[in-house]
Length: 104
Image 1 (spheres, one colour):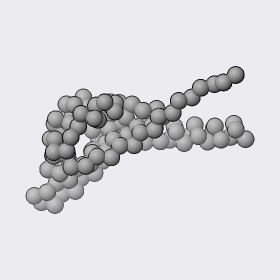
Image 2: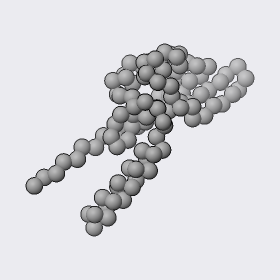
Image 3: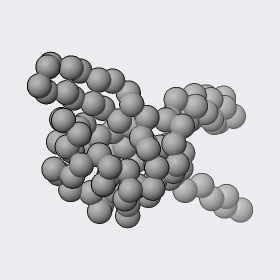
């Protein structure tokens, strides 16, 4: 039974990781340097790579863009940032760190 659970968990982690954005792996320390109202170019410089544009909503004078970055957490880390007219207005971080050890 434990083997089946472990295999299912491994498959789930593999699928989740495959869906992560294809960007550099950013750390929590880099995320802590971000603040609201930063321009996209400043965020890109602090994170050391471009995000992946997930979606864009254009309302004429207001343009909202959602970008995603892959986190350095294992097995899963993801950062989504919301920019309104190229200015940071929202953040969503999903960080899952697992530590595995074998006991004898």
